Length: 353
Image (cartoon, rainbow, N blue to C red; front, side, top):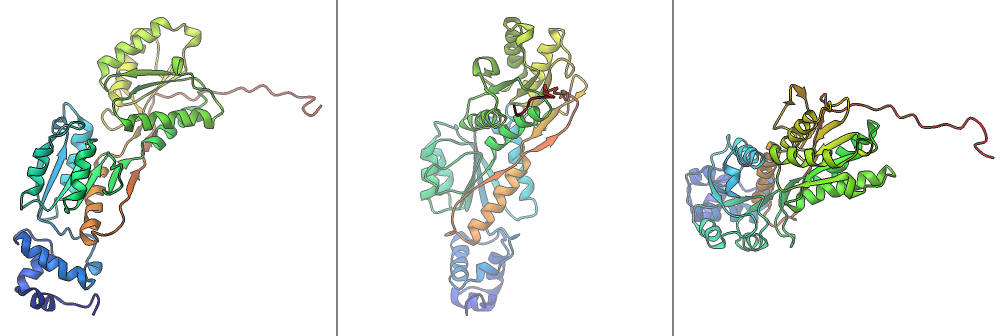
């Protein structure tokens, strides 16, 4: 009988009406949690869940946990857009979404448990929270949960993240392919994800048989703002002789790229004629000083939609394996990177003597 049960048979086994079973398997919100679990348990037992369409979301209520700044576009546009992606992915589902702000490192565990233990909470998506205790609690609550841009070190929760290391490698390697050999990476290292991105940059230097001297080729900032980036780059220009300056700056975000370009402009330098500038966290600014920005667009809205898709799979197959889905970035060519012509010396005679 595996996979062959119809709605009438499930209703008979559950002691419920056919209409109620139909509402549960359609993902409708107007059923009690206990009723819903009874129907889904019978459906799973007989393999019916395997035949349900992937587009069906079998839950009524979802809680999204994120740092408080993520709910304000002015303070964290990246996470704000991620959450908008979740909202858009749920538009065609009959799901009520609630939001809760918790600190990313020292989270309020009592608040988290309060929200998760509410009877109406069917599942959760956790965005950018690095507190391992929260991950542990989420894994033990027996409610589907998906992480976005964070990682469960104990491998019990599925996650969706940008492939930070590959994005860093690709961005730096693109500049090397354009003929640049000395890069300044302007970077914020406030989270391990940014350290992963920097690790990719280092990999690109090694892959091109070049040496990255971090005293010369790395400039760090506390945040991603343009004002701090401008200040850091201005100070760096003042202490760096012209013949020691790199030919390109790789910024950790669009606003950092804006600050770098302002500092270069104030120093009388042109972009890209004198120094090229590239961002590896695009979307926020299409142009800076009326110049189209060359950048790698890090997936943002896609993180939300893919997290909903992974959550669908967890609802259909709660005992399935957990994994980490890494999303690639996308290069957008602008006008802030200049291709350099490399003139390698060629010996005309005696190559094998």
